[in-house]
Image 1 (tube, rainbow, N blue to C red):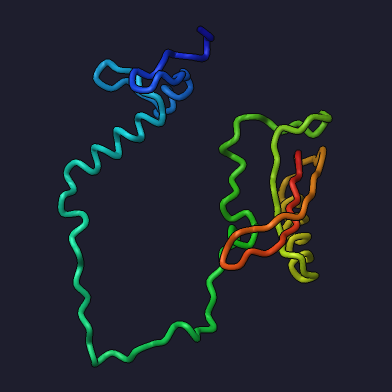
Image 2: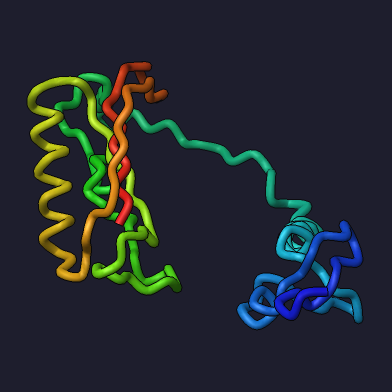
Length: 165
């Protein structure tokens, strides 16, 4: 058995790594070693056990005093930077491998995508350039691009660009 492996899960037989035990992803429960997936299932079953009232229907009160607002014609649209590919959900601190701009090998990758219009491609270019400007220790080693369909409200072709750094 490898030095990294603590043992096998008593429920499903999957390998349990020492790193998972130390981080709390996997754990010993009642003298049984459980992998991350089995721990998640155990937590889910514990959460569901006491929630008999969790799915009771709720009643909505209809009031004639309040004006009705038709949101279908609203001109207000919410968009976050993560929806736009701006990296609002991007967090490099969760990665353990250190970046080394001097080597020819890449240690991470980042994918950007854009609709196939001039304005959207310009926006993606700005996002990529801002991201590179924010990271002084970043050196792009390799890039790939392809055209593919992104599913959403409407299926439309997108340029998908992956940068390896």
